[in-house]
Length: 75
Image 1 (cartoon, rainbow, N blue to C red):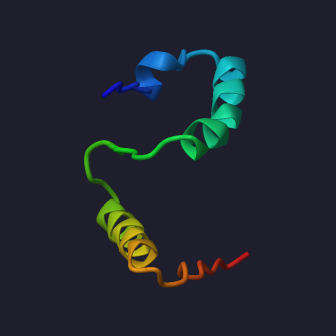
Image 2 (cartoon, rainbow, N blue to C red; image 1 turned 30 degrees about the horizontal axis):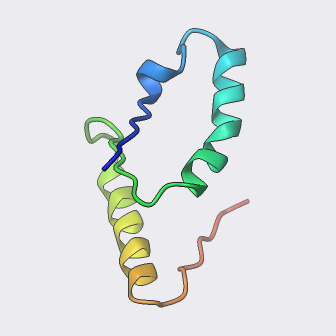
Image 3 (cartoon, rainbow, N blue to C red; image 1 turned 90 degrees about the horizontal axis):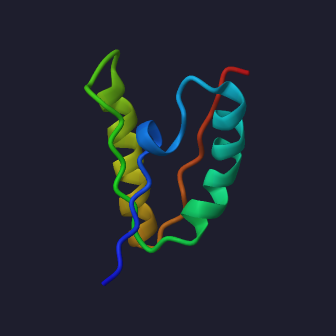
């Protein structure tokens, strides 16, 4: 089985804002074509565990065929 790794910190020059902008714009196309993704956000900080739980719940609901949860904002 072929595996392709995309590691932002390595694949994108973190000191070049123009390159980062181009690469981030391409990520939707990249992730739309994958069959599986493993994401590491870094060390936990500032309630990041809440975000991870929300992502996990959304993935479990999608796997169960339930509708995706609505995300509300103050804006």
